[in-house]
Each structure stands twice: as C-alpha cells, then as structure tokens.
Image 1 (cartoon, helix red, strand yellow):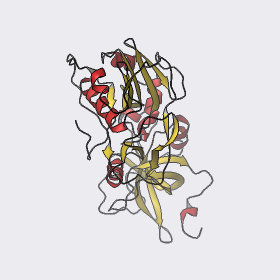
Image 2: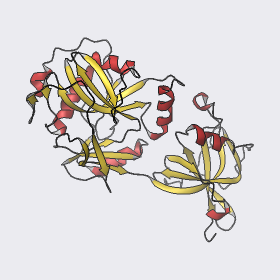
Image 3: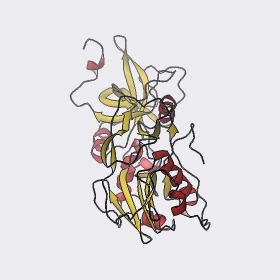
Image 4: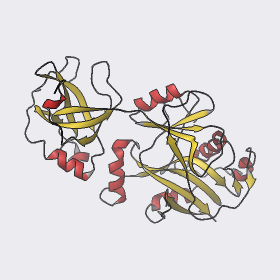
Length: 350
C-alpha cells in the first residue's frame, strides 16, 4: 500500500499465517544511498527526537506523519531474537511479549527499529487505555507502530535517506503479524497533512526531512506541530457511558458558552484520556441531570443519545480543532478542571 493522502494512520491489513516470501533484505537494503555492511549491537540506542515547529513545512523536502500518543519503543533483533527498550533506555522486552513474538516472526537475523507502542487508534484519547493495558488493569491488543528502520540483516541504513528507509520498512511489513503497524506519511504538502490529521482526530504532526539520515538526539530535521486550539467552557451535562467507560460513570462532557447577558449556547462535547484523578474529580461533579437541554441548542444539532443536562456548573479547559459549520467543537479534548474560575467569569467583562 503506497503512502496515501487520505489516510496517514498507516495501518496495513496484514496477511495472516502466510509464509513470508524469500526476500534478500540485505541485498535490497544495500542498494540504498549510504548503506553499508555493519553490525548493530543488541542494546538500547539514543533515538532521534523532534523539536517544536510553528507549522508543517509545505515543500517536497519534508514528509509528515501522525504524532502517535503512545510510548516510544526501540527494537533490536540480534541472531533472530528481539529485545525492546523505552525511549530513555529502560528494557521493555518482558513487558510486551506479544510485540517480541511479532518481531521475531519477521524472520530477520538482525534489525533495528524505531516506533511507538499504542492501543486503539493511537490518538490522545487512547493513551489512558494504553497505560491501563500495560499495568494489567485492562486487556486490549497492543500495536507497535514502526516509523523507521535503521539496520536490516547486516546492512546499516541509518545514513540512507528517510524515504528510502521507510520504503524498505513498508515492504517488510506487508505480511507482518497484526501487532506490527506501519506509520505512513504524506510527502511534501503540509496543508493536506494538517487537514488529514484533524480529520482523523489527532492533535499533532511530526514533519521530517525526507532525504535526511537518522540523527541521535534532538534534531531540527524532525519537527512536531501542535494543531489544537485551547478554550474554557462551562459544563452543562454529560452523556452516559457505554461498557468501555462504565467504571467512570460518564462518556463525554456537554459544554456551553455564554450568549448575551444571561443565556448559554451549547458548544459541543469533550472527551479525553481521563486519567484516574481527573476522572474522579469530574465524576464527583456530575450528580443529577435531566433529559431536556438546559441551554440553547441549535436546531441543526442532532439529538445526543444518553445526554443528561443541568445548569452551568463548573469550568473546564478544552483543546479542539476549532468549530464546525454548526458552531460545535471539533474533537473537543478535556485538559483539566478550572478550579480557580467560576462559570459567571466566562461572560465578557466579568
């Protein structure tokens, strides 16, 4: 699957239990500019890290990937056996046996990968679920999203252009186990990459120089762009949870903004990863409610299943991708409860 401009989640539908083709990976990798025969030690290595950037570059010298919300994970295969480390060098091999098994099933003698461990779609709202899985509180499949290949079967390619390294990586993962995913990209057009990222409910992009080598440590060759806008809203209700969120008592928060001197206008919903402390704080404020809206709701807004409403009660900080044509937040993401701000203070002049 070639990198797409309509989906940069990069999920390749794997071929299950199919014998891998007898591909000469060393021969293929040796064709890349900068490739050389080399050994790769079976130990943690310093990853390349992104610096903050104002906006995704808009020219053909850059490629753009989703900013995954997971845990950075580095992998090395030596003599056919895989080991994994976190981005700061802590060994993770025994923590993620399914990922170890998936890597070893690639059938490589040696390799080095860089990627991100995720749950679900790998968006920010999924990060709490990842932590729950890693702690043993929940059971969901883990996915190791791979975005770089630095070494393969005795050939070092970290000096090769990134687009070429990723081309080999994508080919390698075509028949990979389901626990391994390929992090695709958009080449050149930062505006399209931004639009696709917003549409897929992600809050950031990593832009990388397409023809650069892999550089250890922080590097201006990798730039991260945050795409969210921040604002404060009054909470005027919540939606009842499904099975996945039954333990916390709510699914999303219903938000409103002041309108005129006394009225309130419905502004959309906010979700989030709801770390335990934040979820407990929010849930303690959500007593009662009625099925009838307590604020003005635009006639364009569809009925909200499981919604319970109350008068403006407390203030929250929310990130979003702005407002849609109906005046509702796009992908509202709860950040925190504003304990030091009252609902009344949201009105202009207060």
